[in-house]
Every structure is written in structure tokens, then in C-alpha cells.
Image (cartoon, rainbow, N blue to C red; front, top):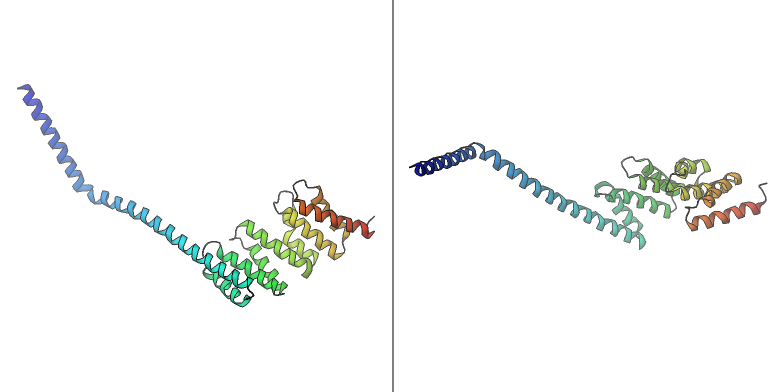
Length: 223
């Protein structure tokens, strides 16, 4: 009798638990299903976005390569048109790469002032990664060695000539050349000497700096 009672009680408990689960499901099913749907949609949405992002980046890359090919094959006007469009509707890093290349095209066509202006603008654009901004500033400075003054060169890259800068060697070389061209041999010597004394300077930069120091000494204009 006791066993029959125990069996009956277990069945009743199981039925109650089943009924409770059914009751809970009826009450919370919409929320549970809704949450599951959101999870699935979220995962699917992430996958769709990644696919879209990859597709857009690939399309911009193809357009950029086409523009580069046009430039290399002396179709500068076509290249400039494609690059200009990329600066407006390109994806990822391609708009700023297009801006850099457009400035280079202007320099190659002999319009140094326009190229400097473009590179300088990129160098000041806080929305662009620091490495690209600094590279643009260096490009502007190199052009200004021939097309500008020492002060203009210094405005672009003197901040990059400090010991903590990864671009200090190029910046110092540019400043040294600008000073040499301006006839300030003492300042030029100081910049080139910084390169020679820097154990981390690339061998090419060190070799060119030694050559310039030799020319400065040979000029006999410094005591």
C-alpha cells in the first residue's frame, strides 16, 4: 500500500511539474521565442554586414587599382577622375589613399603648390590615422625643399624630427636639405649630424648624411 501511495505521489508531482512547465511556457513563450529570434537575427546581421563590408572594400580596391594603372599608363586625367570619385564614395582606407595619390599626380604634373596644399591638408585631418598623416606631412615637406622655404618645411615636419618619432630620420634629412638649400650650413650640419649620431638610422640615410656633411666641410664656409 505504501509503495502504491509513493508511486501515486510521484505521478502527481510529475504531472504538477509538467503542468507548471506548460503554464510557464504559455506565459513566457513569446519572450523566449523573441529572444531566440533576436539572437539569430543578430548573428545573421553580423554575417551580412561582414559580407557587405568585404564586398565594398573589394570594389573600392578594384577602382583604386584601376586608377593607379591609368596613371602608370599616362592616362592621368582618367586616373584623377577615378580617384576624385573614390575620395567621396570609397570604402575603408581607400578615400584617404585616393587623396594621397591625387596629390602625387598633381606633383607629377608639376603643380607643386597644389600637391603641397593637398598633402598638408591630409596631415592636418584628425580623422585620418597618425601614420598616414605623418607620411603626408613628409611628402609636403619634400616638395617644399624645392618649392618653398626652410620655415615652411619646418612647419610640416619639425615635430617629426624628435628622438621619439619613428619618422625622425626622414624628417631630419628633409630639414637638413632645406637648410642647405637656404644657405644655412650650420643648421644643415646639425640636422645631418643627428642622423649620423643615431645608431638606429637606416644605412642609406646615414650614408647620405655623411655625404652632405662632407660637402658642408668642403665648402669651407664653416669654421
